[in-house]
Length: 384
Ligand code: GDD
Ligand code: MN
Image (cartoon, rainbow, N blue to C red; front, side, top):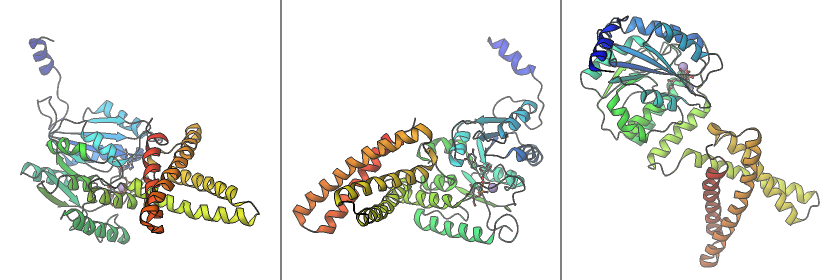
């Protein structure tokens, strides 16, 4: 295009939306909304944003994980009529944090808000959050505490207590002093997002906590209270697994990413496998099977147990199914058999040097677990 043509192109199209004024550049504010089965909510949210953000140049980006209820289809329909609405449809992917990060990295606005797509977050506080950022904050957190959130709204007493506890734990472990580090509702400068993005975990729900932890207290933080509304349509995706993820994130950040929650889960599954092993051995022996055969059968029973439990828990986010599950089971057997060799080898070495049976035994088991973990991460649950 020649300069003249660009000029013509720029002045040609009329501007349908107040607030975006004559500029065709990026709006000041982009709202990123991760969605999973929120078809009934998206149109209501766009309408609510339109009302709340009068006079502000904004756009909204939904990041949908291919919801079966047609959420993405709904968003694309809205987008046809309103160029401020956009959608990323992700296929074969799941995860709130990952979706939020992907969305934040895909917009060009100076300021980015992340908000839930179920109307639980009160969009009318967005202008106040934007004011805080304009006034110098790097991040404005919409907090469920300090407002009327405790008595009213969608925050049950149990959940309020849980979130309060989590906030205190986060305060102790990470040195963050915000009232609601678990909030899924915040606004942040794009510059900061791009700076921190490589450090953020795509797993779990705790994106804000992760941002705060990764920034090492360098961010200027503002807090804006809001009332957490109850959900009208659809269901919450937050379950007990989220608690694990939270503990996992604390652990990972506290140990400088040395120990992951996946490894802890893997270790716990391994420990439960020992119980299965002993039960199977006992059954075999009482059934008259000789020890060597019984021990072998028990070992494979435990491996099978461990594989399925790891597949369901430790590797829940990349669970293997169908043929890939059978292949995974086969590589798991191979790796764990080698892991047993590593285990016995290390244990023997230490035992012959120190002679303390339990130190040798424990060291062998830890060695075997680390080997199994590292090898199955590459072979069994490698990313396709
Ligand atoms: N793309 C995508 N992928 N979106 C998801 C996924 C996913 O796997 N899981 C959930 N979402 C979307 C939902 O559609 C919704 O828009 C938003 O993320 C929040 O999910 P909810 O299932 O409604 O979570 P919640 O209300 O239980 O939890 C909220 O409060 C927590 C604090 O108590 C969230 O804001 C959490 O981030 C927050 O920690
Ligand atoms: Mn919700």
